[in-house]
Image 1 (cartoon, rainbow, N blue to C red):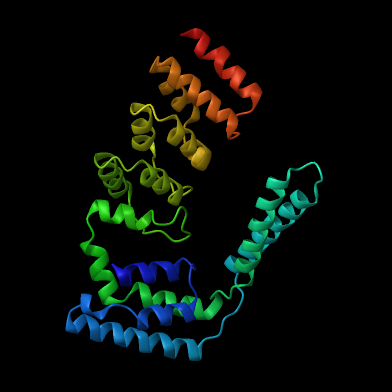
Image 2 (image 1 turned 90 degrees about the vertical axis):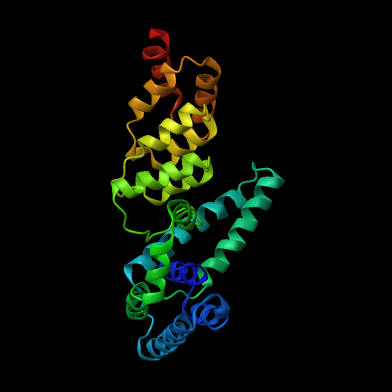
Length: 264
């Protein structure tokens, strides 16, 4: 799994080519067969050659990332400058600001170098072999090591449901929420996940799910399911959390209460 994690980190731009070389150089080769070790050594040499030939050029993904960071940094500056905010809020804002500045200054691969290394890595035989060996629970945990990765494994709905069922069997609620977040906007049906959170009366993960992937859910359907439990404590807790994290406005919550709860 070490090689798979290293490659997954690179293709999602969480590490750059310098870190990639360092990780491949120091990988524990004792975990691999002699033939696999040779393939990994060859991969390392191919990576080094690619780096020498292809430059880093700013691409659209990197431009979008930088614009997003700059927007967040400006918001944090406003929070720090607002005299109405408490000392704790300002301190939190400053720490977050400093962390994001370091993130912004970090050199990331993009352009020709990234594209060439991407294709080299994802088509590597040892990487592909270990990907195929993962069972459903291992694949679920592999994908959800990050809350939201830009490039997730290309899986169909049946495979997605298999991962969800593996997570349900092991009661991996955090992983199920992260799985949905990773496939947000990728035409996946999250019904199994929402049903499980409702079945478990888990207002925390249900509302976090709605907050993360709201546009991919049938919100009216979810509300109906919650109301149909007739579990007043669960319904009230869902409403409180939805209001607290800003899923619905006050007017929307009143409308839900008027049209749904009052009709029960």
